[in-house]
Amino acid sequence: MKAIQILQTGGPEALTLSDIPVPVPKAGEALVRIQACGVNFIDIYYREGRYKTALPFVDGQEAAGMVEAVGEGVDEVKPGDRVAWCNILGAYAEYAAVPAAKLVKVPDDVDLKLAAAAILQGMTAHYLAHSTWPLKAGETALVHAAAGGVGLLLTQMASAIGARVIATVSTEEKAKLAREAGAAEVILYTQADFEAETKRLTEGRGVDVVYDSVGKTTFDKSLNCLRPRGMMVLFGGSSGAVPPFDPIQLSVKGSLFLTRPTLGHYTLTREDLAWRAGDVFRAIAKGRLKVRMEHTYPLADAQRAHRDLEARKTTGKLLLIP
Ligand code: NDP
Image (cartoon, rainbow, N blue to C red; front, side):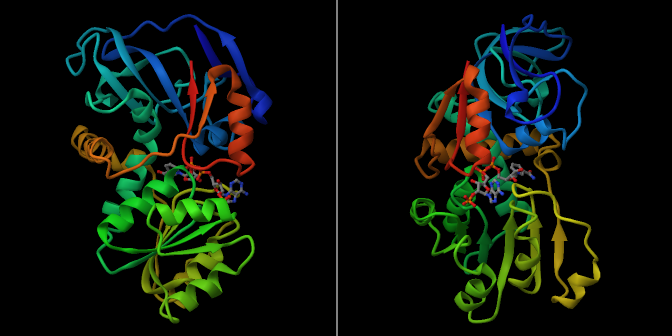
C-alpha cells in the first residue's frame, strides 16, 4: 500500500511516499481501508521530531474509512462498518490496523470525509468548551487562531453556548470566517496589539478564559488578557514552544489558573470518546456545526499540505485522500 513515512525527522521533505505492506490486524485490532486522513498541526511536531516516536513511522493521527477485517477478540466493530479515529499514528496511508477500542462508528448521515475532518479537531473543541473550562452563557473567551481547524469549531461551539468570543486571526479573509463562525469581535493580531484590544473590548475587566494554541508568540500577553482567577488554556504551540515559566506570574497577574491539556486525557474511556464524538457528529448531521474543508490533497501531496499549514495559508481543515 501507499503510505507517507518519516524515515528521518525534519522539514516537509521528510514526508516520504513509500510502498509498504498492508498491516495485518493483531488481536484487538481492526484493519481499516482509509477514505480520508486529517492533517493536524501535531503531525508537524512528529515530523520535526519535537514529539518523539521510533523511526521509521507513518505520520498522521486522524482518519475515517471502512473496516475490512478484524483480529481476534474484536467485538466493537465488524467488516463493513464505517469508522473514524484519532490520536494513533499511522493515518497517512491506504490502510491502518487500529485498536478497535479506539474506533468510533460514523453515523450514516455523516460523510466519511467529514468524519475524518472533524473527529480530532471537533473533539478538541468539545473538551475545551465543555470540560477544561465549562463555558457558560454570558462569559467571554479569547480564541487565538480562530480561523484554523480547531479555531473555527471552537468559535462555533463557544458561541452556541452563548459565550462572547473575541477572536484573533492574521488576515481579513480569516477575520470574515471567524465572524461567520460566531465571533463577536475579531482582532488582527498581526496588525494590532491583541492585549490592548482585548482590554478595550472588555472595558478593562479581562476575559474569563483564553484558548491559546499559538504558544510562543502569544502566551505572555494572553495571561494579561485574563480577569482575576481566569483560566489560561494553553493547548498548542503553532508558533513554537513556550519557554520555561515562573508560576509566581500566575499570582502577580491575578491568581490565574494555567492548564496544558491534551485530547488523549479527555477521551481516556470509551464513554468519553462516545460522548464527545457523538456530540460532534450529531451537531454536524443537524447542520449546527459547520466543518470547512477547502484544502484537500492527494496522499502523495502531503508535503504541500504541511507547507501550506505551516505557512498559515490554510483555514479550517486539511485532508489527504489516499
Ligand atoms: P490550525 O489550522 O489552527 O493552524 C495553525 C494556525 O495557527 C495558523 O493558521 C495561524 O493562524 C496560527 N499561527 C500563529 N502563528 C503561527 C506560526 N508562527 N506558524 C504557523 N501558524 C501560526 O491548526 P490545527 O487546528 O491543526 O491546530 C491548532 C493548534 O491546536 C495547534 O497548535 C495544535 O497543536 C493544537 N491542538 C492541540 C490539541 C490538544 O488536545 N492539546 C488537539 C488539536 C490541536 P493565523 O494565520 O490566523 O495566525
